[in-house]
Length: 193
View: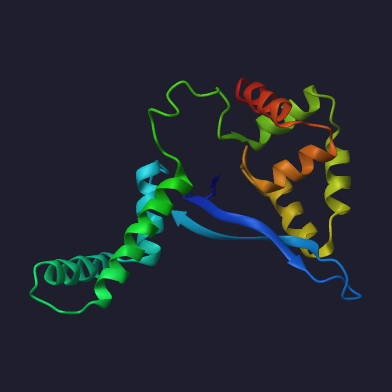
């Protein structure tokens, strides 16, 4: 989740490496990241994010039509057997969104105290306190493949917040010897600054 200067929130999901074939047709290598993204102009609660994802695939009219056709089928008003599979796919999609967001409040009630995101200022100050030179971070970014380097530089230099679960953070953390536990600790400390 990233907060933009216009007050909106950018939510990226289904983030995975973008792989390309090697120059000589050999082993695939990562050349960047790919994902789906949504821009929210409301508070980024689990419910709001869930509704935005669902609406990006099934708008309100499509959902109403689907439910109406399914109700007509199960009530024996319609004999359109294809609706059962459509409805089953819709229900599976809804379950997949629930699993993706993992918003079960009871499950996270204790929590591990790691903030989801911190400001760029907090993150950079925590890195400095942890012995990481900001120039070394820039150097590590410049060593990335060209296709990804520009995106990473923009994120490093201009993002107003840094998200703990962002693949960019995980990739760079490894280069500086951070484990999952020490990266969690860095975010906890950053949140106090």
